[in-house]
Image (cartoon, rainbow, N blue to C red):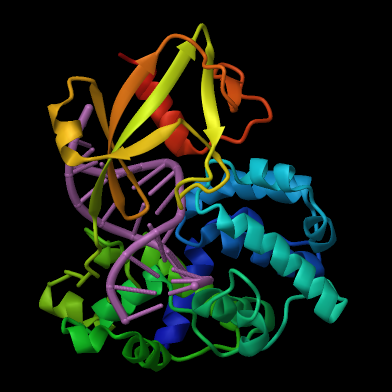
Length: 329
DNA sequence: TGTCCACGTCT
DNA sequence: AAGACGTGGAC
């Protein structure tokens, strides 16, 4: 057997192990660009498994960049319901409009600068598009590849894991004339083999090149995230199978989406209350919520939702969870 | 059930 | 440039 270099080993592994994902079967160049655009937006901060059903439904309902650019906002949001980070949906439509306006083609821009000017397309997505759609010799640095790099080069010090250094190190892994497949191979390897915990090193095609494998130390240095605790009281109105929600214009999270009427309260009020308590994390905030349950639907401005039949209402998972807690008592 | 983790962009 | 932005899954 001939000795393969590192990128060929990774590609070889990918050819035999790649997942069959719906955005990997475009029927034309235009569709390839469109599938990449939609899937990459959905995959931002969201795992593949979660994205698959959303992607399928989305491209069925909104099949190309033209229809995306003029889709009704409610329809768009309904297709995004439950996926989270709802500004992605708005940015996606704005991006579609800008692409049509600027290029008059149903294709994505082909330079880093032009891509990054589009809303919702940052460092990672622009590089992903260049590699996937233009076979450009760039490597997008997503969470999977970042972990792979940290393990291969055994990066353990803060200054070693700075983004610029990680970018330089990714390039030491080399390129391929099949860059489209190569970057997907790297991400797939990170996701399926070089997992955050208990990596499957025995199945890794490049374990002999991996410093962490040699040292048998697979720890990853993670960023420290803030985790603020805030206290709220939520008014849950339940009458038969109906409940009362309002459009959120008050808090920065879940803007313009349906939530229960809520107020921020002091820790003392929360701690001294005997009402049902519920803890939920949203974004980087740790919310502690008092459930204030009422039987009557108030005569105030809002939206009455039948929770057995949600219909056209767009309800974020956050609200649905509070719902279930309130009902379960 | 609660707690922790994974996952890019924008400002 | 640190913090805001959501959700699902594993244990």
